[in-house]
Amino acid sequence: MARVANRQSIAKSATKNKVWLVAFYIRLSREDKRGKDESESITNQRLILTDFLEQQDDGDEYIFVGEYVDDGVSGTTDEERENFQRLLSDIQKGKINCVIVKNLARSFRNNGDQSYYLGDWFPRNDVRFISLYQQPVDTYKDPQNAQSIAVPVQGVLNEEHARGTSESIRKTFDKKREKGLHIGSFAAYGYMKDPEDKNALVIDEEAAENVKSIFAWFLEGMSKNAIVRKLNSSGILCPSAYKKSKGMKYQNPSVTNGNPLWAAISINNILKNRIYVGDMVQGRYRIKSYKIHVQETVPEDEWFIVENTHEPIISREDFARVQELMKKDTRTAPQQNSLYLFSGFLRCADCGKGMTRSKVKGNVYYYCRTYKDQSKTACTKHTIRHNHLEQGVLYAIRQQVYVAVAFSEIVSRINTAPLQKSQSIRLNELIVTKEKELSKITRYQQSIYQDWKDGEISHKQYRHMKEDYERQIEAINEVISNLHEEKAELENGIDTENPFLATFRKYENIDKLTREVLIELVEQIKVYDNGNISVSLKFANEYRRIAEYIEVNTHQNAV
Image (cartoon, rainbow, N blue to C red; front, side):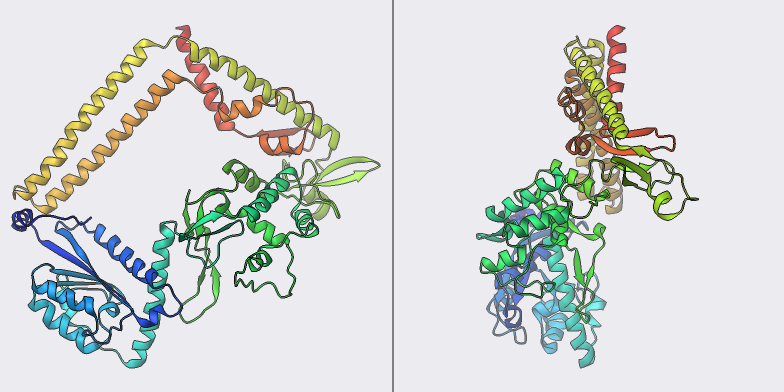
């Protein structure tokens, strides 16, 4: 990043590499101000220029002098721009030799002025001019490009201006999205814009209570349609109606009547929205192009997601549980509000499809859906009675609970046993050795900079050596970090409040299978053709890790 330096240091370094005294020029036109907050455009231009300056790593020295802002002034004439004139004056006083703008339109709308300053005034005053977007220009690194700017026909110019404006706005918004700043016109249901910072969110307590209820009801086993009926029958306003009741000029194009109600899609969107755990998720939709103003869905891997930007309404644990349930088949029978006990958990062990539920003479059975609904030649029945399935799953969970309790007791004994002193000493010695090695490499890295400044090595050699030292430092730091983790594990052992141990231990006296238990402990249940089942429980990786820890430490203590 640019820094402030005194004249003596500047004169000294100038003999070694180029020193750029940098000024930002920022302009907001009258057109830009119409219907918009004027500070936003200025703020966004500043953000883009600052990001560019921070990324410069070409061996030259960049010293930020200041910014020159003309707010609400046309770019067609330079005489009316007070701070543009001040910029020119400071250039002539020797305070500035590099000007950076977002695009040429920020400095010039008059082609005559553009030709004069780029082709005459700036070169004559030894000024480097950089324009980042639309028509990228760098009069120092690519002077030929700056001198060969063509004047397009008026039609192309108009279209280019429209395209450039659209691209500029998109880049501006993307920069804010990358930083987790909220740029929407309205906050998501459950939040409101911070009165002191319109790019930040604060909780709307009234709506947030409804969001909490929606998540809680879903985890309790209510279907989305049942939640919709409960909200509407309770007279709770849906998001669009709620926002209007608060005086917001909110319009939802999907709502056509004057008395909108909650719908399943609204519940679905709320349950899937990461904003409720404190993460900012933006950029899910975009305009096709500056000429086609039609929204299109953006792939999830291109969304802008920044974690922990605001206060959460829902815990990450509850949100994760909801997402798992959303992936399962959780349909209900007609007029049923609650989900069946095993809804979404059962799979045919052979074809992988879900199981369908049937009631025959008072008994509930499950069948392979492929066999029952599609083709009796594609799969077999895989039938199992509900009470047998419930007993089998409950038995599997009890076994795992027994293991968790036993593991907790063993881990507790290991944690209180005497440490293997030789192993602890060995780890300390390795850490000290690696830290000395890191210190030596760091000194080498610092010394090559002075070698480059003194002309003993070329800039190319300096860059290669610097990158090599950085790789070595990164590798050593990783080794040191792993050694510290190993030492901490040796000294502290595994916490008996580990998620796997604690979650299963709390069901030590379980005597009945509930949907809450299934949601917390079970991933999936496979039903085989002979009526056998396999239950995939959660925390499988934690189970293996703790088992390995017990095996290793039990052996070491025995030795």
